[in-house]
Image (cartoon, rainbow, N blue to C red; front, side, top):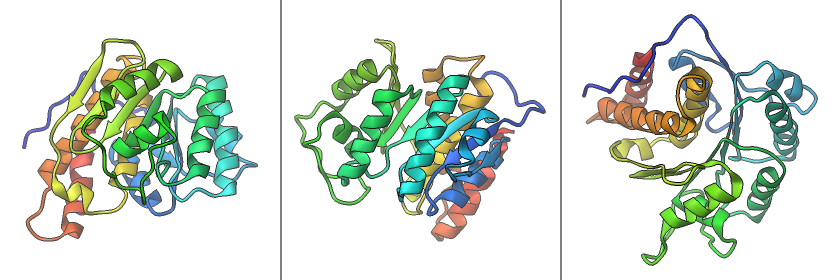
Length: 256
């Protein structure tokens, strides 16, 4: 499949992407950043994260496998990022199954600026209403009467952030009213290896670092989601998931 190219081209600049993420997907996320032409750093010690974030071009906070150390590191890093005007992506992994995670996300959003709030459908609904719960980090049952898009619009307005709900169809709502996207595509195998959702968060942070001066943030998020789905389609393998993952990394690197 021929992947759509975006406005602008890569140059010799290699932005630094600070990812405070989970060890399950740390390697995949770092390699995704590298494949996109940027430099990852995965520092999470609370005594160094402010210094690291000061030098970064984007910050990714991923709640997968949350610990006290990572919580403290995230609190410090996001304050630094806001002070320096560095884009922040918050990936709300698991908040639909954990009160601790949900309350931490609410704390971060109440006290800081977040450019992109990311979650699967269940995680977005859990942020919208504490009554929505599920088990595990996958998408749970969503009643047909729930209007996810309207919930996202309220969240975007409340937190002044872009809201991204990922799934078979990615839904994106801008913080400014009236600009919404639906991203179709992808393939089944994207859901059969661990860490692809975390990789997407890292890719969005990378693209914000590369393109923030040239494009609107919501457009950047849309193109990042679309590109990732297209890479998944091109990488699809009739054999096994290991082959698919190698192919996916190769496809991600084709943007540079």
